[in-house]
Length: 298
Image (cartoon, rainbow, N blue to C red; front, side):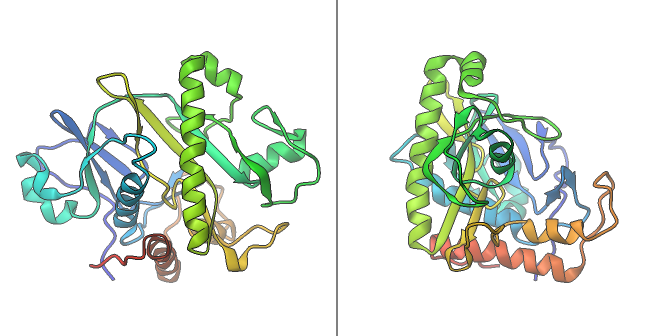
């Protein structure tokens, strides 16, 4: 198993943005997005990464962007390191499979969430109010149960801490009604096709979040990451039972481990033991294989 890449060391190159997982570099006309192997839980970046996680996130995003490009334009220019600017040529080995050259956009300051099942913050809101993001739902849903039809539940995009769910009316106030309608419709179309594909591969796509931006012509394009285990809840159909919290193809294994520790969920976060690292790595690699039919090679 390869070592986890949690820190990028590119002399003379500094990221213009550094997130919990991704680093964004200015590449002139474009940006270069690099997915590290960092992993976060409870809003804390852990000191130990998950080997190959960044490669899964980047490669799966690229696969979904291509598969669903008939629905909407996306920001990917190239995932081939040979197409990257000369300033990155010395780092080809590090960048391979974990980076993409993308268009610069004016980013909408919202997360566009599609939900097909009631789980997470949606479940909490439903049990408290009978609604999710201002959308009334029928009574009687169980935890993780499939909704009668998918719903669009936008949220704020927090620089730190938790995103907060907002109503569609609040979204209209933030970005304008026309744009809000377009983002809602795009979100539900993308989710609908992805959900059908996942189901054919024995996977439930319970929910996912998208981000969008405006290109230099004012066209809405799909940006950031695409239907990854970090931005989506994927559940194996064979182990799904409404009323129970399902097994996930994501970092739930890490969260469950951390929940069992006497940790107050404040930095610094504890390191992960080797068995938790390997099990989590296997989850990411497995969902990539199941969805794409391909395996990531070292």
